Image (cartoon, rainbow, N blue to C red):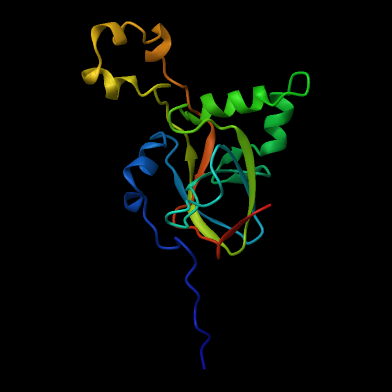
Length: 183
């Protein structure tokens, strides 16, 4: 009798099946690659939210690897690499957090990134590895049409500057408590 094959989360997921937000978070080059992360892989993110959305029970798709990895010619730094390169000043958490905001292109509007969440995969999970694309640091463009001229004048001159992006990211959609837990 042949053993039944187990389909792992996102194993057959194609890039075009990601949400527009997930696809749009990547740069075009290098092309994001579909990868398998082993059970026990540790991940992290700076976030203001809990591990799971209380309405859906699904974890956010956007993660960084805790340990450095090399996949498909991409040398992806882990958290300790980030800490060494962008050391804290006087015991504060500012520099690595600020680095990740700019390089992951996460606006204050989306997420204050007030704390770090570390998690571990319970099962192997597939997802996409690639580089974060640039994003504007504010949501003002979407709100301009509803603003008075006086309110528009209050928008800081740096509002049109882009967060550079450029950090590696993992997009791992569809995870719930059977796939990941908070450390």
